[in-house]
Image (cartoon, rainbow, N blue to C red):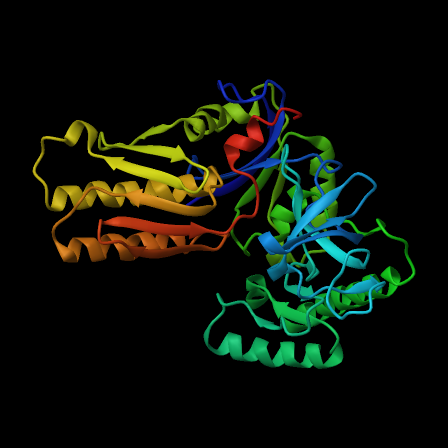
Length: 406
């Protein structure tokens, strides 16, 4: 199976999309789109940047607080994400956070139209093999690493955490592919960087940006699994040079081949991105069997309905299981392409056989487990609706492509 990461600028031709060109990062498996990101301009996105903020308002009724991180910029922090606050200036006498206090915050979601940016007080810096955190209790090994390798990495993380007891260090999934010297080296570099951030913040004034995250297109490479891509292709010379420089320090076995595409035929047309993205913006998705999905967005959740379509008059039983399994594969793909997050309710075609229901649930759960973003199949309700939750990391695709100020 051939898997490529395509990075190109294109104008999406669709009734809901902006007329301006957007930078697209597309994962292509066997000439089929399986994942998609709209890359924001480096100057426009603040995700993972760290600021010294000033608490502007405490809203007990919604269990959140509002923190200014610039003269005209305010972010929203739920109380659940405020418990790890690191004070740079504590003006109130009580131990809890109060209006006027200055704390370190990390942006986790950019502002969207009328919605404020979202932030957290637990700071983190991610590398190729480890993640360091300002919370010393966040230590350990990725859940995706098991067996002897997990035990070995746990011992290694214990040693690193003993060396840097003020912060937490977690081994990422990619750490299982390299020798421990590289893991330790990166862990020490990032740990020292985190300590420097915490120390520097003590001497800086409010609204100072203490740390700027790398551009999003480089983060895609950093956060990819070892061997996930057979090739990375771009027709943007500036980004090609930047990626080449970034990957030059990688070990040979972690370095994905990078190619600059220089041809008169557009890269987005070569991989049919226009058609694939257009389908991902449509309400109805047709399946090869003649069945189809209807995807509806509401304020509370996303609802997906599976319809038998042209097969409505065929016998039920094994045939409905086949349609549902086909739909499960496409839904798992659409969740990633459309970047659907939060609660999702899926109405598969009703099946009477309990064994068929179990087969569908187990298959769907395995498909969702392949998602980079935490996606959980909760259960099938008594009404045979399947509940799925997906962690919110970025805006849905439909919001990204129709951004009024894009």
